[in-house]
Image (tube, rainbow, N blue to C red):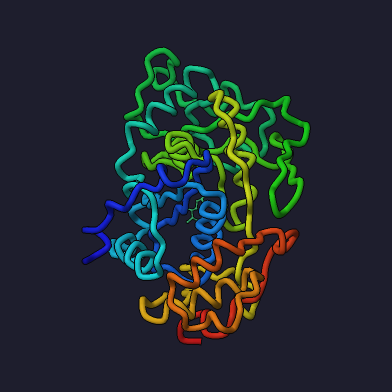
Length: 324
Ligand code: GLU
């Protein structure tokens, strides 16, 4: 049974009546590695420990950066590791119409504008209104032609000079000042690709995500997402940003840095190591117990608070860069 043919996973909502909905949302730029396993595991454990649903969404928005095999290989490894997601896997490549509808809504409310300026040009401009917009007829708010090749930016109101803060479950209060730290950011690229920011808020909202658990490398995207929620009148989910695993040289373990791909065999031991890394103190007797037993123990004993304030930790030996 391959991952692609076995996507109809059980729906746990009847047996798990809580309102919690979490998700794991990998970008298929390469196979699953130890760093992405940590995000999958922490989001899964948090959802299941709350009797919640746990969804898997493949964020395949950027074909030039993707590996065509990666989505199937990620799902195959998740399955081999015993992660039982709820419902069908969602693919962002199927969601163009939904993203377009959200962009239209943001344009109608004057929260998005078409932009021909580079990031550098924008940095020098305090008031962008009218300066960097595409020339008419490209920009008539009431008859928008999205087939014109120009970027669309989310407009961060110039008056947003006060810090925008949220309370992260692990990292505490985290603030950025929209006008100076963020600026007007791209939500649809000039080459018609959707930005991560627009796609992620659209799908989190549409899928009813109540809790986002992901790596701390994404923490400063959160204010962008909250700004968009506010513009659209949507509630923001709760956020928990876990520390990232780093190489000996301090670089984040990532596909770009050729982190070692996880293999389907020995999943129980790798899960044990991931739990140990997440400071869950799995008992020695659980080593080699098999993934079902390890995951079950981990759900019952999930204590995310032990990670409070931690931003990075060294990846265990054996999970760092391939070939090093
Ligand atoms: N697709 C993003 C990534 O793989 C994660 C998105 C999210 O969790 O918000 O880095």
